[in-house]
Length: 437
Ligand SMILES: NC(=O)c1ccc[n+]([C@@H]2O[C@H](COP(=O)([O-])OP(=O)(O)OC[C@H]3O[C@@H](n4cnc5c(N)ncnc54)[C@H](O)[C@@H]3O)[C@@H](O)[C@H]2O)c1
Image (cartoon, rainbow, N blue to C red; front, side, top):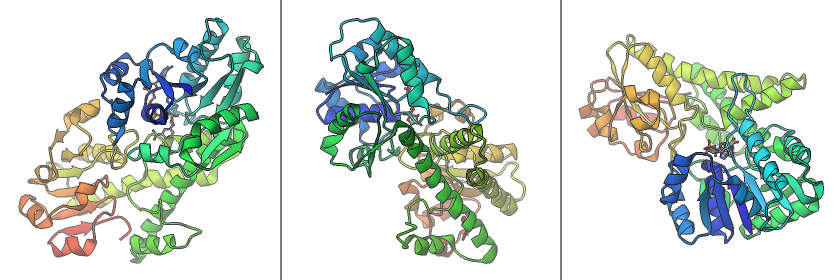
């Protein structure tokens, strides 16, 4: 099939590269010229395991091309995916301006009656996470531009991939949700996904839009729930890992997303929970569970800093080695990373920070320029008064404590992701402070 994917971020580029790899002809469009230049050279502008190889292979085979010209991409495609960002506004509402701008460009192109090289009927697929009702807004924009309802259909096909395992998640989804208002559009999208042999669910557009928010909000709720249990564990002397492991064996509960720590971050959970709360409040409903989920999440990083202060007392001039930065391992994404909140609090109290993250460098973000970056774990902890773990990268789990002991000034580890066995750490001569243990 001939496809256009508008937006070449984590979702758009993975979608484009995976569909191209399945044999489709894909035009990936972005408004960011620098990004397009990088992609056309065969490079990927962010860290995602396996993606550079997939992009390069399909780009060379000419199944995947990059363009700034949305109009030509629309005219050359049967299916047009919208995968632009929907960041939060200051009131939590999702900013849908990029989706609207793309919809307007599609409408103007179709209105211009330029030669339509890929048939008249177009399916416009919203892959961006958008508030319920966005499908109607996109449809209205097309109708206002005098595009006949016979010639297009707007579908909601939310994406559930996770950064760090995006390709495998895309290729092996638990389910594919297709929110469509007619069989023609549903069948076309189902056909596109057929090679994945996945469970495809046909819903209304509005249900599909809510399924994405509800799924992310539920996962965020699981995290805040176990964090709350961890906070109780600390007060009553239980170990949250033992609790979570046993809870998770219950099939009704499941072990995933029951990892206590310094809270969730990233470009999805925080913004999607806030957007869902905003959506509910717009309709006069007070989302009490979701409010608590965000409150507990905010509390976790503050409580972690509180533990560091309690142990180290005065942080002025103390050298703290921070292991990790990205909001989770196997990505370089720093959006809403709890690490940044922790580091800011420590800096305000006068601490000197040395950071090491396998995928993030000081060039990744302006505010990181002031931090001292190390090239590896042992360089980072050299001379440190304390080690704090804020991202659970696999290589941090392999730390040689005997070697570490000789390098550090203060033998104390604050494990914000519960990656170590407290007994083992204590036996090697360090004081161990985790979350809920
Ligand atoms: N990142 C994830 O893990 C993930 C997972 C599932 C769903 N989502 C959702 O998918 C959407 C995209 O997320 P992302 O993380 O890929 O975003 P991103 O910020 O990484 O990428 C968005 C891209 O869209 C481009 N863009 C913005 N406006 C444009 C326009 N008018 N025309 C052309 N290109 C434009 C930007 O330049 C950028 O390259 C969001 O709604 C997000 O909530 C993200």
